[in-house]
Length: 138
Image 1 (cartoon, helix red, strand yellow):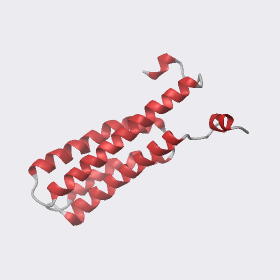
Image 2 (tube, rainbow, N blue to C red; image 1 turned 90 degrees about the horizontal axis):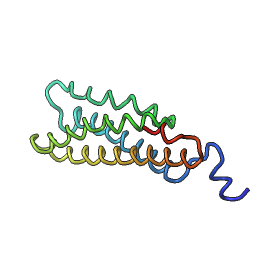
Image 3 (cartoon, rainbow, N blue to C red; image 1 turned 45 degrees about the vertical axis):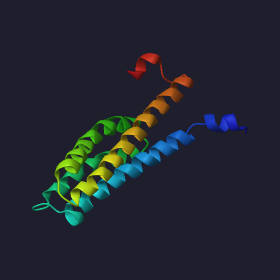
Image 4 (cartoon, rainbow, N blue to C red; image 1 turned 90 degrees about the vertical axis):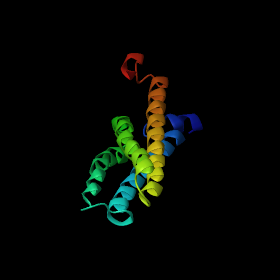
């Protein structure tokens, strides 16, 4: 079997797909861990109910682990809520929150970028294989 036939084999994930998927999952897990640690241990606020902000991040985890491109699409929109929170808290909260907030912003940017590249690459590959008509990409 030559290299071209291996790459065209069904189920073969190329390097871009594997890398962007791994970055998406790692940054999502990072956001979950950071959110829980931030609100319960590192800089707890009030009665610690802000830890519930992590719950919506649990839903896309299943889809990302199951290779669902649709999940990459909508998580790239959801992540902007957490990006906004990070920017607001970086500019308004006292220490240690203003130190943790840039990490949240960075994780959000990695998640968005990885998910966007993942979706674009998979659509490009599907078009190249003739599996997707140009009208289906909208």
